[in-house]
Length: 198
Image (tube, rainbow, N blue to C red):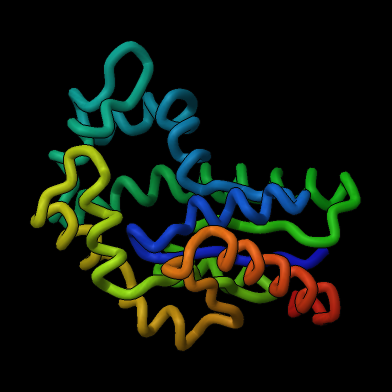
C-alpha cells in the first residue's frame, strides 16, 4: 500500500483537499480529528494530571489548555509527550485497517507532518498551498482568529516555501475546487505507478 502524506499551513485548503482524496475512495487519516477524539477519551486524565484545571466532564477544554501551553515551549513539549504516542497508535491502526481492506493508497493528513518528522513514514508527500494573501484571508474567516494567534500558528509551522520545496506534489487551491480536484486525480494517477519507499 502506498502511503501519501498530506500537509499544508493554516488557510491553505488542506482539509478540503483531504476530502477530495476521500471522495476518490482513498482512506484518509485525519491527525487533528484523532487528537480531538483523544481529548474526549484516553488523553484526558493524562492531560489533567500534567495541566490541572484544563479538563471538565472528561473532556479537554482546548481553550484552557491553549492558554496554558501557547508560547511556552516546555509546556508544549510536555503536551506532545502525552499526545504524540497516542496519535501514533491511532495512525498505525488506521494504516493496518486500510491495508487489510485492500486499499492501494492511504492518505495521512497531518498538519505538522514535516515539523514532527511524520514524512519519514510516507512514500510521497503532497503539500497544499496557496498565495500568502489567499492564505491570510481564509485564516481570518475562522472564528476567533486574531493577528497574534495567526502569527503564533505560523511560527509553529515550517514556511510554505520550504514545504513546497520538499514536497513530491503540490496542490494549489487558489484556482478553485475543480482545479484542485483535477490535481488530486493527477496525483493518484502518478502514485499508482510509483514504487513504495518503505
